[in-house]
Image (cartoon, rainbow, N blue to C red; front, side, top):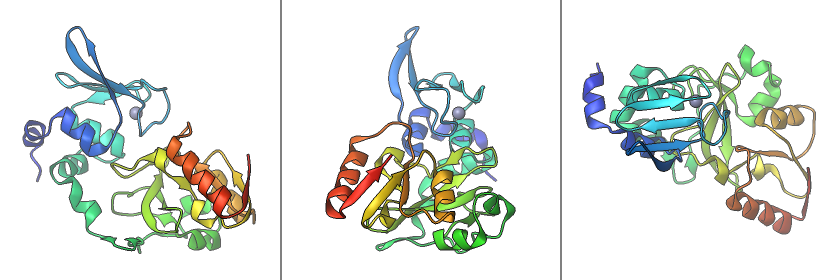
Length: 238
Ligand SMILES: [Zn+2]
């Protein structure tokens, strides 16, 4: 059993921010250090939705909820406080066990026949994509969708929560990836707004739909796009 006080003594807010891989800007308020930035879990509420005051606690203006360092980890990871407390003590444990040189090992236990999956795509498309409902692991309770790099190497899973929010693994840099980019070979690629749009497009036989995981466009993504447009004689349709 994890002792919450023990976790709070051992893990500072600054530690947690680094472990969770969230990007916050350091500022000052009434002489105290304050970190602000977008909330990676809610993805709404703008660029200053998440506030961390190391002396006091955190607050998410999007969710209108806050608390201590464990509650911060639970909010950002979309997990229970117990799971968050355990994760803060050994954050690498869960993620590093199944990484292989060729990429991440696919999660075998994802269920492509779950109703939350079938609400987005057919079982056939779900099996083709390699997505499914996760009943355990870091994506537990979400529809987990594999994310590949441009060469088709499995690098992470993104989860769609029941309320439609996305869950990403800690440290996953959303702006560095483009969903479905490994399937763009030649011809026209369609840039769509969301992951669900891409999945539904695949369901409807549209070739090479892609989307960004973040709202803005990052230079890394522009470079990846430029690479596919050049190297794979692709036209981008927006
Ligand atoms: Zn939030």
